[in-house]
Image (cartoon, rainbow, N blue to C red; front, top):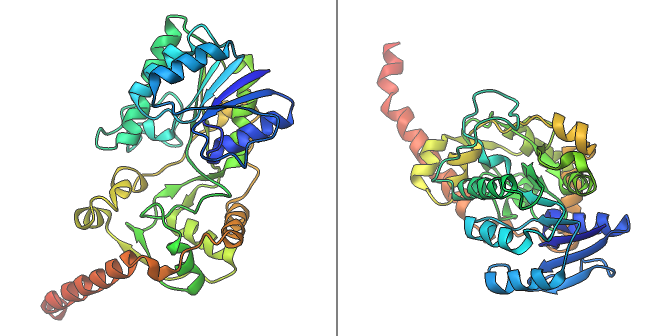
Length: 344
C-alpha cells in the first residue's frame, strides 16, 4: 500500500511510520526535515513546511496518487483547507488525527462515545480548532472529495517526550518525584484521566489505513486504566521505584486565577473526567490497550535517563513558589477562622 504521512517523526507518527514500514508498505513522509533519525531507511522523504500552503499543495500534486494519506500535524482550519486542496482526488483514503478534546466539557455521560456533542470551549484553541478542522474535512467527504476516517487519541505518551503534569511540560516534576519533593496537583486530584502509550495508539492508525470498514468512521484510541490524577502520579513514583511524594492539592479556579497561562489546561481540560469508550476501535481496528501505565511510564523514564532528559527540579522554581504561596494562604485562613472553631 502506498501511504503518505504528513508529519512522520512526531511522538505517534514515528511509531506509525515504523510499523507501516515493517509490514512492507510504501511509505512517504512529508515534514520539515528537522528530525530524520527515526525515519526507516526505506521511507521516502518529501521535505517541506506544510504551513507553506502553495508549496505543500504543489508537491502533493507532483507526488501523485496515494492509497492513504494520514495527517498527524493538522491543527488549524487553514491547514485543513490546504489539506483538502492538496489531496482531493489524489487519495483513496484520508485519516485525520484529531483529539478527544473536541467534545463538550463536562460531558453529559461517561464513558464518552463518538456520538457525543463536539462543541469545545473557544477559549481552548487547541480543541476548538481541531473541531473546526473535523467539520471542514467532514464537509469535503460529504461532497465526495475522499473517504475519511477520524481518529481521536487522548493523552498519548512515549519514549522521546516527558510525562504530563498539571502544568503540562517540563521534566523537572520527574526529578521532584524521584527526590521525594512535593508536587502540585490541580483540584483534589480525583478527576479521572486515561493515558495510552504511543505504540498502542499507532497500531490503530496502521490498522485503519488498510481497513475499508474504517472509511467514513470516527474512533477513540485512548487509555483504558481510568485513573485519578492522584493515582497517575502514584504510578509515576512506582515506575521510579520511590514512594509517592506529597501531593499538594490546590483548587483549580484559584490556580487559574493566579497563573492563567501556566494552569490554563487545568481549567479547560484536566479538571474534567477524561474517560472514553473504545468499543468501536476494538471492533473495527483491533485496537488493544497492551502497555499498562506503570510499565509505560517506566519505559519513558528510562529513555529520559539515558538521554539526559530529566531536568533538575531547581531549574524551574514554579512549583516551589506555588507551594509556598499556598502554604501562606492556607495558614492565613486557619488563623482568620480561629474564632469560629472556638465557638463550636
